[in-house]
Amino acid sequence: MEIGPSDDFYRDLVEHIVDAIIVVDDNRQVYFANPAAAGLFARPISQIMGVPFGYPISGNGPQEVEIVRPDGLPCIAEMRVEKAPFRGKTYHVVSLRDITELALQREELNTLSLMDGLTGLYNRRGFFTLANLQRKTAYRNEQCFALFYIDLDGLKQINDTYGHTIGDQALQETAALLRKTFRETDI
Image (cartoon, rainbow, N blue to C red; front, side):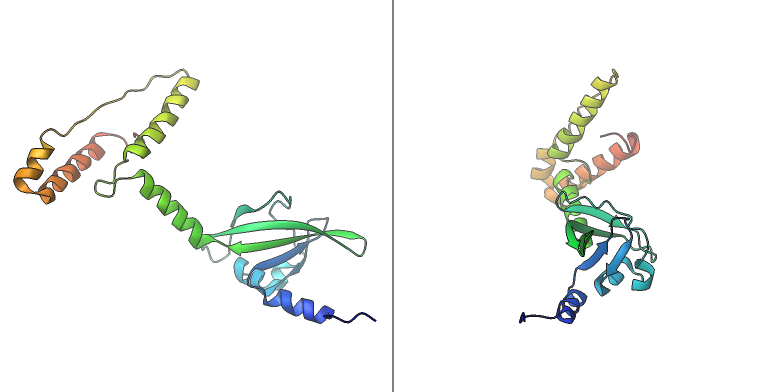
């Protein structure tokens, strides 16, 4: 006789894990879902079980998936899939971790790394990144594009004479003028 945890013990553990656990059969039908899955998908378990699983179940490492919830709130999850043979059948154990907040912070950091906080225009890194993409697209499509170089003359004198607050205002007004002049799609 083997001494160890019972099936009830394992079921209880899975039902208390904070990550969503979904078991999918070879027909891509949901065979099992824990309470965390109900929370992540904002649906009762009864609406998850027995329905087709709508995400890829390849085990190629973690991947990010966008979950469409009935409440309309966006949700991004990191999904991992492992094959699990059980009683002569192969199942796919899918674990999903809500990373929505992390994904939004990553997007915000990416924006901050490309934008100037004072003017709201692209900074040097943002300009070179997007201009290089535009150059490659124009080359591939055999198109031309224009490059304007704009300099705010006398900014050092404005800062030295009137202070950096007024210099910042001059930069902001110039940025506003550029936004009015050029299209939103221009870099």
